[in-house]
Image 1: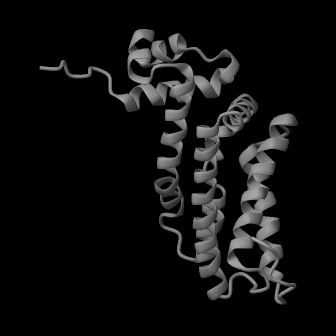
Image 2: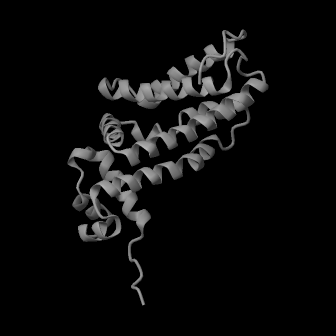
Length: 204
């Protein structure tokens, strides 16, 4: 009979994610992640095989967390526009320190160099974009956003604003990332609410 796992994969991955945010991919080691989880480096090697494969599993974990995270962010909000705003701001709380944000973006650079991780990144961003587009369509139908832009373009603009804010803030971290992201997204949403004429379909 196989021996039961004393430490489950989720505990190991959660510990690895904490360490990755704290020290970045260049200084990340299986030993550090294992120590955070109260396990041995051999345990992580046995479960995940290598640092690279562990990073892939962290990306899969992130993709799986997106839809539940967006739904939780919107919980209790009545209007489609309020839900759209909350969804666009999802994930910023964990990055509201210069170190965490810089390390998260350094991890993004690692993702872009690996085919599997790049596909997972694209999958995650597509989930976010489609979710934002659905909420934007509801906000347009409710008259909370102008109908001059298609929902998918609204979603793309919001996602680009959010990701751009993360990048610029980690380079020059003045004030709070959450406060800056909220202010920037509110300006974009106010502009989109004022749009009343269609300037053309654009290209998706």
